[in-house]
Image (tube, rainbow, N blue to C red; front, side, top):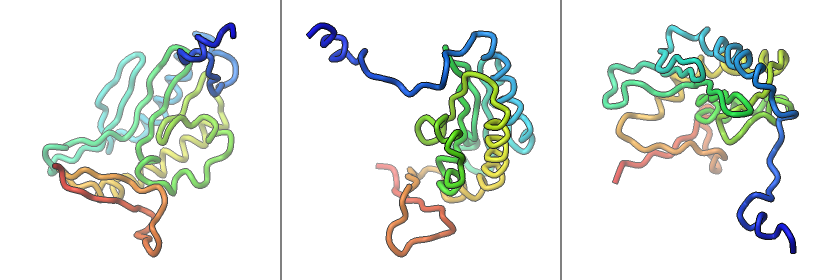
Length: 173
């Protein structure tokens, strides 16, 4: 069949669409708005990257070495969209339970939200989610001791329920 080679090479797959392809002029404004949501949390969070297309925050943990800082979140401008990363969502599955269907559609993976333009309603919801994540993140990090590989369990095993934060700890090989 014609085009079968393209599909075999991975080019024929459909991708989840974020609406129209973003106009290049919308991305800088979208980046600045999403950056502003994170920037409200400095301090206590620490800016680790602050560029024209990239912004990142971390939790400062000077007493814990070698992991003195843990990534909290960030904003990156991509070719056709802006990505908003929020690690608190990955570490605390309770945060995604109340997401609206529209914000959930923007979710890519476990901790990333993609936007091609400013959306006031979704940005307000994302701002509230970020506020909650910033409040709970120290509790999440308490379950991740330095030097230990940790895996957050998405579904609780029978009989387990430590306030919704479930962590499987294993020592490095």
